[in-house]
Length: 259
Image 1 (cartoon, rainbow, N blue to C red):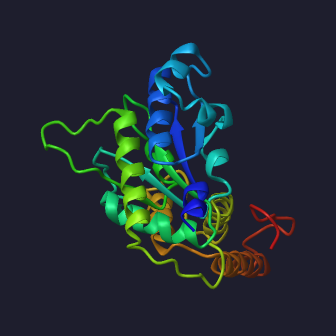
Image 2 (cartoon, rainbow, N blue to C red):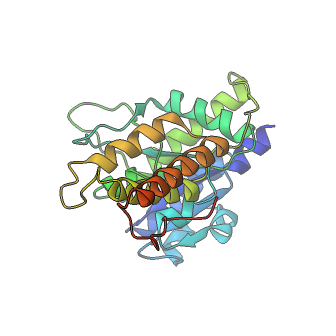
C-alpha cells in the first residue's frame, strides 16, 4: 500500500528558474522515497548543475516528465494541491502540511493520481495556476520571513508524507467513483463559463471574480466522476433550454467533451 501511495503522488515544479533547485528537489524526493517528478517549463533542464545537485537522485531526473503547461502536468490527477506562501486577494482553501498530506494519502491509496504543485522560486504560483488546484498548503514559518527555498519546501511535504505513511495514521477509504481529473475540471469550467454567458448570467467584460469564485467552490467540493457528469448534463440542459427560448442560435455548441 505504501508503494502505491508514493508512486501515485507526483511532485510538480512550475517554471523553475535555477537548475540547482530542480536537482536539490530531486534529492529531497529521493530521501523520502518519492519517485515521480514533473517539470512545467523549466528554464534550464537538463544540465550538469541539475545532476550535481541531485547527488545520486539521477534516476528521478531521468524519469522526470517535462511539459509546457500546468494543465498538462495535472490532467490525469484527481487531487491537485499547491504549496503557497503568499496571501491572495481571494483566499483559496488552505491547510497545514499535515492536513494536506492526509488528503494526499487518502486519494493516492484509493488509486487516484495526485499532484503536489510548487511555484516559481521568485513569485510562486500565479492566481491562474492556483485556480487549477483544489487547495493550498501553507508551511508555517516565522511571520517576518516566510520564504522557503524550493527544495526545502519539497522536503517538508515529502517528509510529512513519509511520516504519516510510516505511522499508519491515515486509513484509505474506497470512493464510490474516482475523482474528477484535472482535465475534466478544466472542461467543466470552460463549459460552465460558456453556459453562464449563454443564459445571460455572466458578462466576461465584467467578470468581478465570478469564475474564480466558482472554481473555488467546485474545488472545495472535490467532485467525483459521477458528479462531474451530472454537472455537465445540467449545463447542457440549461443551454438546450435557452436555445429553445430563442436565447441561443440553433447552431450553438457547448464547450468541452461530449457526455
